[in-house]
Image (cartoon, rainbow, N blue to C red; front, side, top):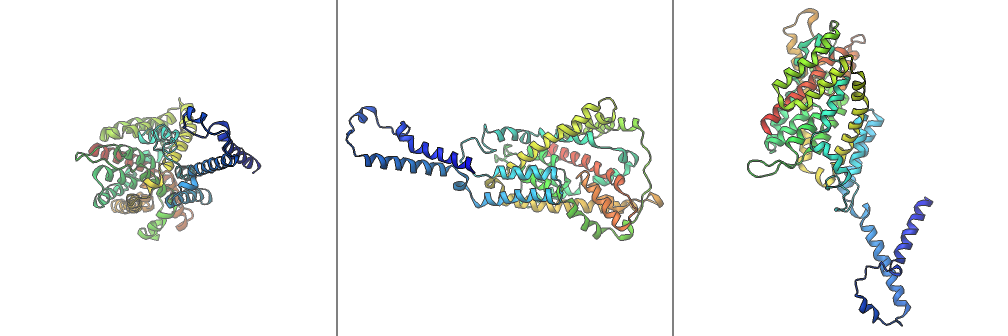
Length: 441
């Protein structure tokens, strides 16, 4: 406190001394200054000093956040604080919500435009960091780390569970149609739709290509910049998986079905684990070449993990690299939610569509699992709960499924089974993004 008072006192002293030191900003020519009456009363000089000091204080105040704050800034700062609270108090995706929450606060500190402070001002530090979001640089690096952390054994052992990950993508296309109905154009609707995949990096990647505020439509209009609202919506609903999904599970899956025990998956050899990323890369990218930046890095990271020869690279990808990129991505996405850009009717509609899409995706996975059981007999039946993990919120959806199964049967362990549709959901959302990109870009 003493240091703050000292600094404030020095600033005040400098303001009072400005006229004496010749920094009053007076533009009067020198020849006119020479003709000024040297016997001018000292009271006039004192009044001039006081006026300059008052003007300096007023100018200082005009540059503070107090003078430029709006209700929008206050609301967004409160939202940032809520994100931080949810991450710390309830452990809802703290690695995402805490950086995003801080970013929201940073992006909504009121400032005077033109000083290269804001994230949208060319040349500012935040604008340079935001380049990785706008150009889709960060999401593939996130996928590299995810690939290096993911074990595809459960999917390799039971490939039919991949269908559940595909079924959950109904949320993507359902939201796409809903966005069109609400008046968004095709590229914007495509970017909004991917929220239904519950995959933050994929949502950022697609919105940076389709709804970036830069692309020009055939009719000459410019698409809206929806990267911030889409990213915040996607990460928010990812963090709220433990809140959103359990009620839907209980509604659609009977208590008897929740008790179904699945037979243990077969053992997967190391050779299969090494072959899988190569084969999966070829198959998925031939189907959806536009998703190559995401899927290529995902399977590359997995090969680093499973090859047995590149453990150092795999360790870097799944620890240091993904941690650094997560920090940059979270803070810059949060900072992009400046009140004048974020608090709009479009943002509210995006959040509403995001909630609906998440519900649709969860329902799609659950109902398709029940449909699959019509064709399966005996111990080959699957527990319908694992259909909810078809959304690509890895690994939270699988954990929620496991926890819900334990409530009905304390000895029913579904985590490894749920991971199969969970990781296939990651692949499915990337393929869906590639398909939308190829049609709408």
